[in-house]
Amino acid sequence: MSKTLYVGNLPWGITDHQLQQVFSPYAEVISSRIVTDRDTGRSRGFGFVEVDTDDIEPIVKSLHGTTIDGREITVNEAKAREHRM
Image (cartoon, rainbow, N blue to C red):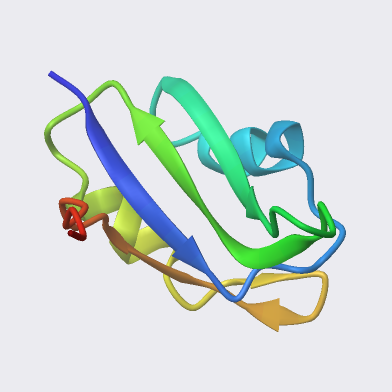
């Protein structure tokens, strides 16, 4: 079973691959994705990492509040996406 983590306050220049490298020492990363603005293609400063484990608490405790390129990141379990009508 896998879980998806929300990662906020990311540096603007981080790539999907770099985000994967941050999380790979803690769990097998299935996918990582930086969310970009659809008009400009620039990073919106947050992303998602899907990991191959149900036990995400150690990952959150280890990475939440750590610094990447001078920015203190936020890490928590991603919430289910609400569909807008």
